Length: 448
Picture 1: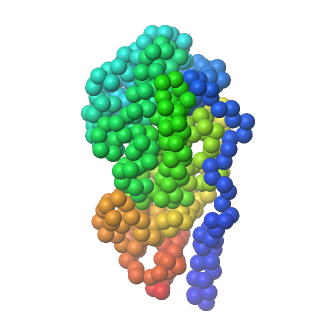
Picture 2 (picture 1 turned 30 degrees about the vertical axis):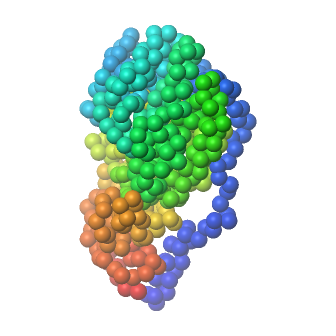
Picture 3 (picture 1 turned 180 degrees about the vertical axis):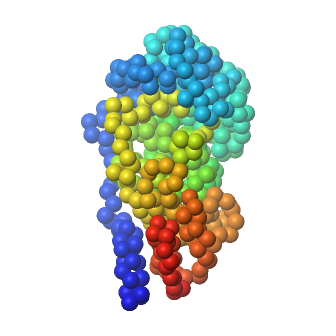
């Protein structure tokens, strides 16, 4: 009888694992009605000129004003003429401080120029671009236009300056536009730090957290200057073809189909959030190719955090990567203005399986700090260092990755003994413990 129950449970759990590659939709898919930008047409990466009216309306709302005020604060401009209390925006104390210079100051000022129409912001964007070209580094000196600390930092440094070029383009004179475009097109800061190497990810491979930052930054760069005056467009078109392949490689060789990353979640944030996800947006907006809708891979690099995050201090404890101006730009452009809030339980499944890594994520609800989460990875994944990665570290793992929240879930964690069983046996073990965490009564397990 008990073996019948185990077989039934195993059969149900395996259902999400049997999707065949031939059933997957084409990738990327063309964006319906997309009109390619003309040479010299900007902005084009995160949004188009036709989107400006809507963005200005967003910026006039209460939440939009807070986002713009925070952007000005991070640029060292204060909150301007907006009489707003920013305390609720400054939960991360360090991220609320203005920095003298960052890789996205040019983008921040270029964005303010487009939203407000004030020429002074385009001039400030020009000065910040010149400062970067003169060698002034980011507040975090590892990031720099002129002397980045390796390919890991060169990718975002190049990419976010390219976004700045895109946003400030119309406020600059033709000679300076051409100068910056040529600087981007011929970018080369030593071994592994040329635009050609960054686009292709010549340093490391997708299983390294360094890789997404390189190829993401490279993609932003080539899409920003595509067809513009002053660049070798034949060269740029060849790089765009390579970039398209790099996007797929990062989503299939670095990440799994539901958010797992080869080196673990902590380093996975670097490979996705800093420049890679904005690059996917640029591919959609500028090139008319959608890497997000056809398959779940890209979406779940973000949705994973909704699945696994427990509130702290009344706030979702999502991963954050410092107080950079570009975060405000992305917030205003992508915030779901006008959409009604819904409980994630009405939209997301409570059980998600990443087939690539054998990772099983379970959550009983989305309510408060007492939610139960069980997160188990059943297969080995290998990052750049060549060792199995299971919890964001480089130590040899037990066969199952364990992560539980709340006292009842911790009870389940104590029951997760090491096992040499094969894959099906591991599934039974893990989900037996999920039932233990949720139901709270004694269960029995078998080694297979």
